[in-house]
Length: 272
Ligand SMILES: O=C(O)CCC(=O)C(=O)O
Image 1 (cartoon, rainbow, N blue to C red):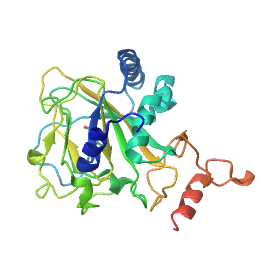
Image 2: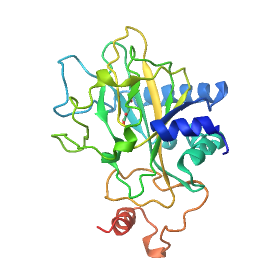
Image 3: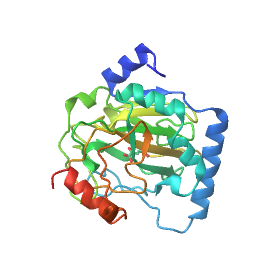
């Protein structure tokens, strides 16, 4: 083990998630400042990302701003992708020395109106053959159920993929009566704490009912260099970048060096 204790690894294996202290105060401040600068710079762009579909249970105003690929805006987020302690923790959890980037994204949930996220498994957005995918979720503010914090069904990663009941394309969520948010375990996180969780873990997050506490988060989805996608979906900037170790399954062909071949390569890998 490079970062986790034996007890922490057992907790992750049993529960499908773990809360870790990985980042220094300086790293958290830098990410927090650049997060705000990026969102300020993009104020006025279409960032609204409240999930659509028939899962909603109330008529309240819902808002959440989202920007994907923060490493394309600030080197602080590029450095984060190569953070040695973060990758040590991921290596322990994923049990592979070969770690690839799938995508990154950031959410800013405002006070009073910050949208909840229905209970879901990330699996449905980007299924992979060996289920190696994990999320590294950084809470850039102290968060809890009051300001739209994350909640989980511990151990639910062992259930495998559950039925996606979404009635709209591009969104995927589970039966909210079968997996009600009220029965989920809330996570109370300090500013800068990290939750690593399996893409099979059933999770969601609460409405931000606080009057003055924004809830910002940054998330990185990572996969094993040996895993293969089961569908051509959710392509994004820097996808497949090797963050640790090696990945020699990637094709090398001078004629396919440009981005338009990315989809073709993934289609070939997933047998479609
Ligand atoms: O930002 C949140 O509260 C939840 C994010 C999440 O679970 C997701 O986007 O898959």
